[in-house]
Amino acid sequence: GEVLHVFVSYRVTTEGAAGNGLALKVARRIRSLSTDSAQVELQIPRHGWGIWPRSAKRPVPFRPEAAKVFLDQDCLLDGQNWLLGFVQGLAASMVFVPLLTWNEEDGGSLGDMSRIGVGGYDRVDHVLLELIL
Image (cartoon, rainbow, N blue to C red):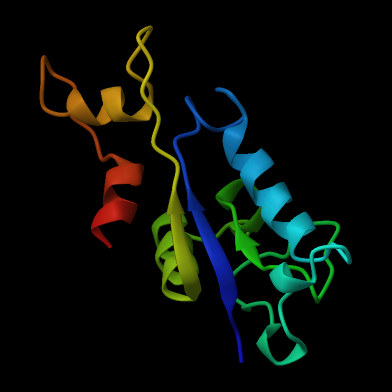
């Protein structure tokens, strides 16, 4: 059936393209390890490949035997409600990988979470929402 193997949760400003790029690096590494012929123990058996969910866009390039990793920048459908896309991606995933960082400069993704409700910093925190779900 339809399956995602891994859902990578991250904050764009700290682990995404606007930050250190860690999210994309993690997603690419998971995909490459799952298809590395020298790493047989990390390969997904044929019966575990599953079908890419219709509720998510396949990243390019795509290999059916590779781990199906949900990374919003690659997988949210154009025009789709972002909250619905996240929830469907998370619900279809076998493993949830939250990328949480801390640094002295601005606090990283954990620093952003710690400022919620302080000094007018009032907004929906998507990383926290994914952790709650």
